[in-house]
Length: 302
Image (tube, one colour):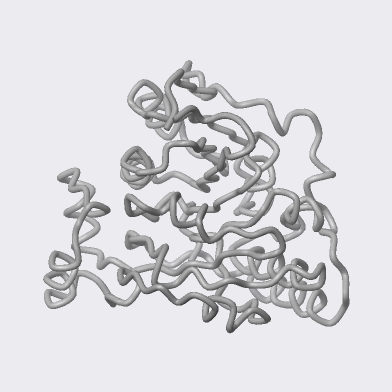
């Protein structure tokens, strides 16, 4: 299948200085059953080894890949995701963190669940530090594990739960919590480009770890977009990471509280604030980061 046309999906992967984890995530995306998608690596100012990982996958992936980079000036997850959106072409955007491995039906399931006016919020399985280290050191494709292998890891303490790995036909129940914005996180979230543009994307005034995805969800609710449950369908495997710096969290909490109190829909500084450079990929260490392939089919912030 050719990754063009109205059915194209854009998978926007946010990353920062975790090349080994990104390598595992890109490997998981190379195994997708649905190949009518593109990958945008939204890089919040990583070292050149991240660009080398992207370039190394360009000739191996069955889908196009693009690397968008900006200078690292503290954690700017909101802005780099906006840059990823601007560099993408799909009518459906899936947001994934650069430490979350997608199981083979991840893109296909988000496509199937997608509806205009609804965001699909999935969940994750957290991996232990030891299991994460083992997987990354040995190149183990845990995204391909079946339920029995996951049960084994649960008994060993390698993962924190099994429920996100289950696939259940919830039908109308997927819209039961349609007014619940809490828990909608960009480690596993999809929505129509038109709905993203309606709220002007993420709010780049959020600097430092935390709540830029909650702010997006709140403003989407103000715009009439509702939540559709991606649990028991789209679960991802979240690699272990150290606790992020939360020094800016109180400021971001105040911003979010203001967004909840008002009926404001558009970001204070969103997609429309980006200049032409938003679509100019970086070249780091001599490696071109706009890596494409003719065939087609996190930053750690949570």
